[in-house]
Length: 136
Image 1 (cartoon, one colour):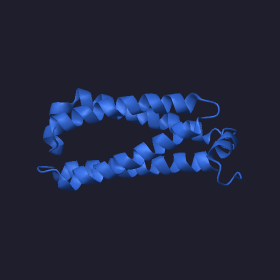
Image 2: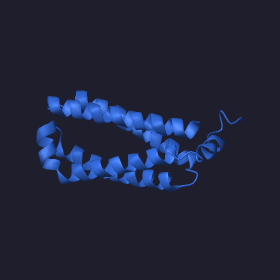
Image 3: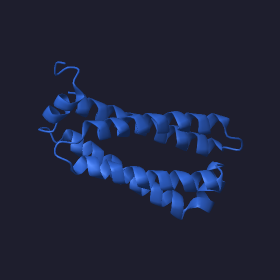
Image 4: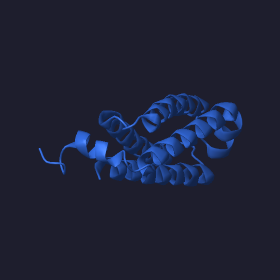
C-alpha cells in the first residue's frame, strides 16, 4: 500500500498537524455540551422540539459516551486511525439518523425539525473535517 491508501501511515503523518486533534477535541466538547443539555433540559426540549423525552435522554447518553471516545482520540499522538474512522462513521450515522428523526417521527415541531437538521449538518461538517484530517 502507498501512503495515499494506507490510513495508518497517513494518519501518522497527519499527527504532525494539530488540526485533527483540535477538531476531535472540539467535537468532544460539543458532544458533551449537547449531551448535558439534552439530559438536563429533557422536559423543556421535548415540548419545544416535539421529540419524545426518551429519545432525547438516550441521545444525551450516547453523546456523552461519544465525547469520551473523541477526547481519547484527540489526546492521542498520533490519533489511532481506527478510532478516528469510528468517530467519522459514527458522526455520519448520527446525521442520517437525525434526518430520519426530523421527517419520520410524529409530532416534531417546525423548531424541532430546524434544530435537528441544523445539528445534523454541523455533525457532517465535523465528520468531513475529521476525515480530511485523518486522510491527508
